Image 1 (cartoon, rainbow, N blue to C red):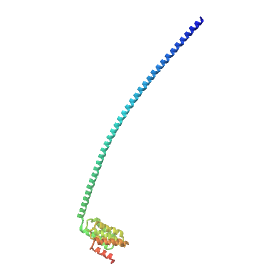
Image 2 (cartoon, one colour):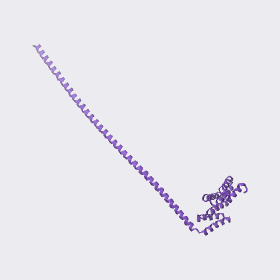
Image 3 (cartoon, helix red, strand yellow):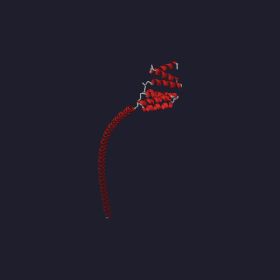
Image 4 (cartoon, helix red, strand yellow):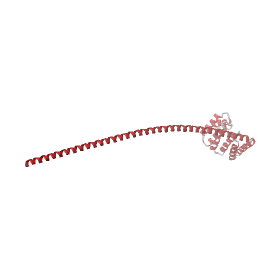
Length: 252
């Protein structure tokens, strides 16, 4: 009896353990199923988020490309404007230069006309008698040996009668007066002014002869000879050329 009871008890315990084992397996499967669902949900959410990010990146790329294209168009427009403005500035600069050139030419023409009128007025207003007296007075000062007074008088003559037929002669006597004062460099400068301003003057040969005399007095023998040779060549047949010939021959 006791043995039977023990067997029954053992069978009951075994059945309980079996039921407990079956319960544990169901719980594990459920946990696995729940975990799988959660993983799949997380994976789906990740994929959806990734797709959303990719779409946003693509939208941004399209927007950046559009902005870049707009910037390129704006840059091309600005370059076109700059080219137009550069052309306009160049045209304006040329017009300004042309205007200045034209104005300068007109001013020069007006100045030349005014100077011509002044000369005509001075010539018309000149008194031949007073002119002759002024020249003779200056020459008389030279003849008297008053060389400084003669220079001043001839310079006043040149200023007062710039259109006179005697201007080159007055300039010659100024140079000759400086030669008499032994101011040879100033004398040469005065005679060179005569040669530059009135090369066809009857006093031009005498001016060259006076320059040669100044050079000789300063010890510039070679320069003096060259001046005398130039005098003979440029003004042959003149009294000054004959004197130059004699000097070169050693007669004076």
